[in-house]
Image (cartoon, rainbow, N blue to C red; front, side, top):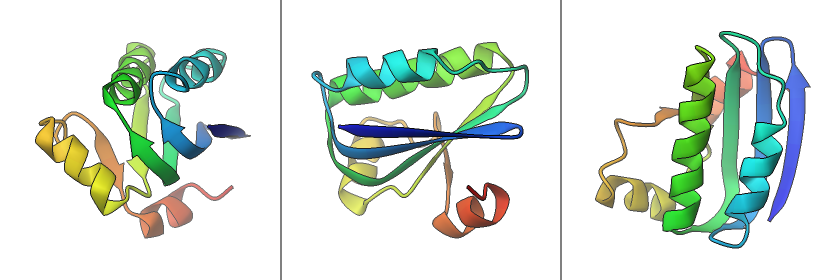
Length: 111
């Protein structure tokens, strides 16, 4: 998995590319744990280039959301492919995560 982090004023964008599974989820958690979040900041996870996600990947996304929310922040997911969206739906997680469209991402969170 290729992970790129961009810091902006008030938010961070994390670009993910490849498979998010039991082997790569540890790396993602480690990188997001290193983000020096301030109260109320946002983290946007750009999943446009994620080709596969398993339960370990979903688990690490949940941990990231919980960690950011503990700092009164927000996590948005964007660029979800239909196949990956279906996994979130089957797992009953569509209401747990905050999803934004690509247009909203480009408008509100320029990199």
